[in-house]
Length: 273
Length: 307
Image (cartoon, rainbow over all chains, first blue to last red; front, side, top):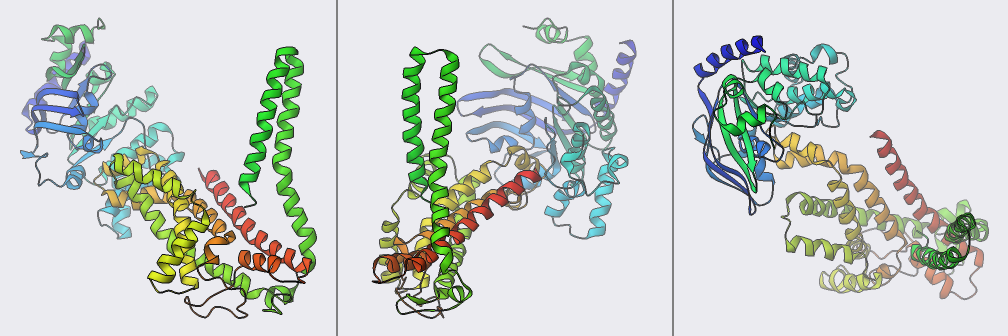
């Protein structure tokens, strides 16, 4: 625990040196008449990992999906307030959602490789964005797979179905698929919840490496995971009939060792509920 | 496509009887005996359902096989169908199937895509979906009259292959749209999300992720719809099928001969018709329709294996 703590303080310093990549200001999100996020204001630092933690149903995923507008796909979803990427309001009318999602990629809870070969899975994004030169595609596929720490395991079976890989490999394939479109932000929605501990560790190592180049936001149930990988952490909760409350946001080390809010303390010490 | 409704009716009646008898028995007998009785009745119901189909196939083969010969399949009919072969009849039916395919496939699949991927889920969409499903239940002669008034008369296509194909396609559309919708809805949402989340457009997602996955289901539906269209008599009766055109149709605006209508005329309107020739026509029609049903089953089976 002590060693962890020291590590966390170091990370905090880097986090503070970073610029703001994403910002939400007084954001409310509604699904029909249900309010899923309440008055959320926070700054997400570039080149850092931000964890969103909290109990099920508190609005973690809704907050995450705010940043690539995946909530738009849900009929009746409505956003109030400002969400900025590099100072640009991403919910303003002129925004091209497709371009936004190229910059803000997403990895899902359940690994969801497409039912096609490993190569085609990674090449899918670049192809759809207009790249057709085979050599260029091969280059970006290899680069992305290396980046996702998967190349050595799949380099001899690029033509095999992506569905034939193990769960952890599938999830890294999904990460490679995102990396191939060269995003700036990667959103991860409980990326390890369907994986065994070893595969989880691999993904966490990968996240630490990726954090040097990308802004990463991860939603997780697992507080040890949040403590292990993130520099910043947001704790969300639901209160009685109100979901989507941001209780506390700050450097992970402080949130875990010296929480300002009683509710945060109760949750992280397991005295919740 | 031997009368499925008849079979369904058989099953319905037998299952009902079985249920009633079982209820009575259950009140009186031990569990072991009621188990055995259930087995017997359910087996009987299945047999009753399968037997008519087997009977029709076997009976048609026995009676019609004698008529099948190389000249029967490759010559034009003469003496009102009493002599010669049925080549123009077979070709006419194939043209009809092709015409139905050409019109029903693109429109049906595109409508299926629109209704599942693009249309908002509101009362209008639900109404349209319901209307399409009900369309499949509209009697075929009604489609025939629709084709007569719209394609034959209003569009001035006349009694023709084109008008008949369009009429059959209108009828097949309901089935093509319904099966396309089901196949498209069966594609997991995760695939769509994974694609959209890396900045791929909705249409690209549909084109490159959803359609390839849904294709086996769509093809199965289309093949079944086409095979059903091949067996229809009423819609083509009033839109272009002719009793006797002893040559192949040269243009889409020609009249044509087709198997079901030919069978209808030779079996009811030609005195002194040989029974063997009649059953021969029936056998050819049965083979055409059943082979398409088998094709649909093969496609379904192979796509299931691939997953």
